[in-house]
Length: 287
Image: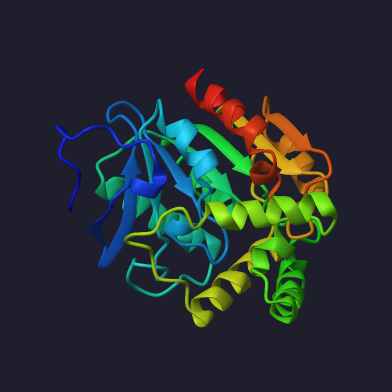
């Protein structure tokens, strides 16, 4: 396992965070660390098709000013080896393997979209592992219409291809003037890292993840009623990928959770409203 020398200055810019690897359970996991070491780390669980390069620095950097942040490539994605699992539950098992390999028995979780599904399965299976949970742009297992993500995603891939745009501009943002501006700004921020960029996900791996989300949407719901950990839930009010009503569904299922919905925004509402959301998430994780 490679890691940073503790004598080096603290890196708080995600664009500058070095990529490390750790071997666990026959898989080599690629990950990045930034922020001050020590205490409970915040582990980021990434979205469908995403690699290490898909985290918005305007979300990561503010949290990393005060907290040890860890991002990682799911098994079979980017620079991590192995085959992409067929189910979200298996992805959660892999995340647990990765976290244990780094030596942590207690973490905070920041998750987005598919990452939020993985995080839920992780918390259900290992309730003592996670202290605080941030669920954004996501929904519960068996959530109404979540299985339609497959159709929505393929439709927007076609639309993006026709207009020669990044699919995330369609999938994450409204197609009004505000949403289009926010989408282009978001894609530009993802390019701020210029050195040591990750490999993009393969088509086969992407399709496997999509089917896993579809299975998650069609499964019997998990019992989240016994969860007592502090939970922050956030989304846009017009999420076409994981319907916004499912954020409210999660809020109802997880006792004592906080819910924030951003007006006139879609699946990527937290990225469109990063100036409001990043301080909120930072305070939540610090309190």
